Length: 103
Image 1 (tube, rainbow, N blue to C red):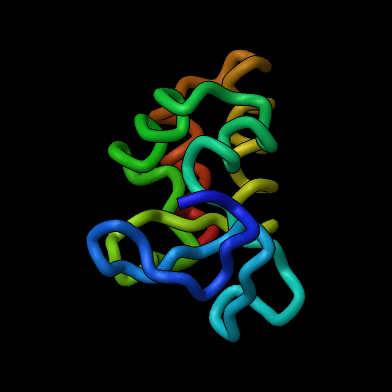
Image 2: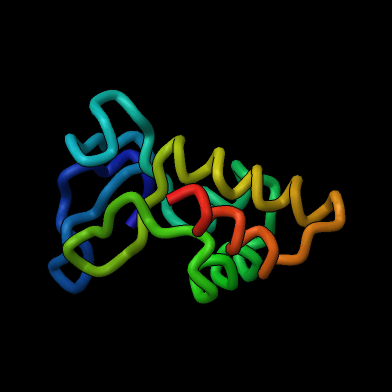
């Protein structure tokens, strides 16, 4: 499944989602990126983004019917903020606590 094949079916029947796909949940007109694309856009590695997901620092904006995680612009901004805070000396636990206090 390649970006740009919006609305086509993949090898296993799941709906292929291009990086330009939009959703009402993510907000009309916003790009939705898969994990690797989102990591690149945020300036982190794919493994770093997966770790942020695992420890609860970030959640995908949406999932495809095939289970692929998609990230919108707000999620990308949050990933960048997490990276900036971590680079500034905050531990990921501190960052998570800060985010939890804000809810």
